[in-house]
Image: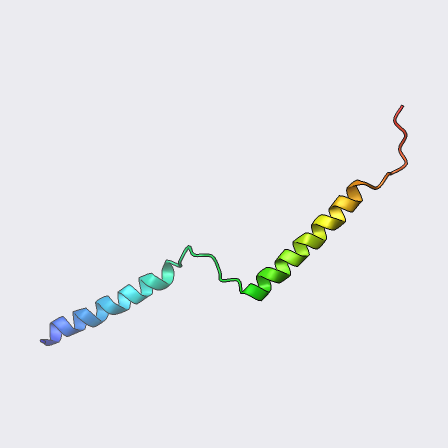
Length: 63
């Protein structure tokens, strides 16, 4: 392999790596099973608290 070809190959490889760093993946971040369970428990807790808040009578009389 001659010198010119090798230099071009190295420069192209560096450019390719640089472009790969600029364009991040659109894939969502991985969430572990434990984190998903915690998030689900929090949602359940929030839903139960909001449903109980909806049934609270504020004492406003409607005539």
